[in-house]
Image 1: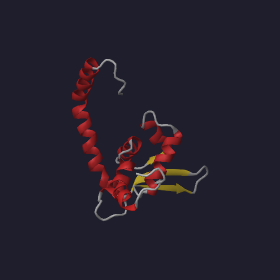
Image 2: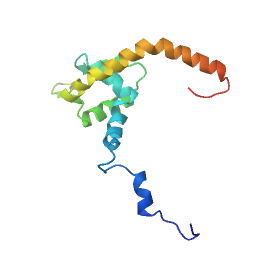
Image 3: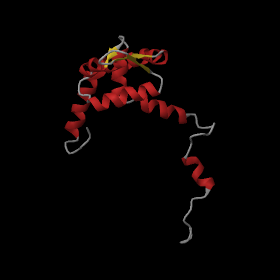
Image 4: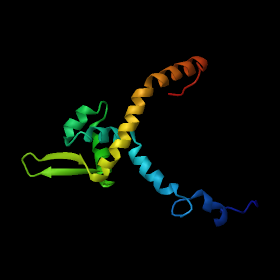
Length: 141
């Protein structure tokens, strides 16, 4: 490469940007998995799988989530069409959340993941302990 060459040629840069190309099916998958793979989104979906919830009910049910994070999470899920937000014309306004049909279709997958997590938690805990013992100076958490 010459000292004056400062641009990447289009032929070389194309493989680094797969989105928008028919031969890269992972483009859409990444975007969706970023949402439904988010820890808070999964927990909101798990809670709403049991039925409608008001904001405070969700916040109490999801240990450790801040008001701001819950607000962002339900808004993102609503934007993606997984959650339906209903505002009732009362004073004060009453708002609740429920899964849309698309969100409901996701619950069996989330439940399977939750069940798998519960089934394998002891194995993962033992594995972590073995790793930590064999690698005392690591900073992986």
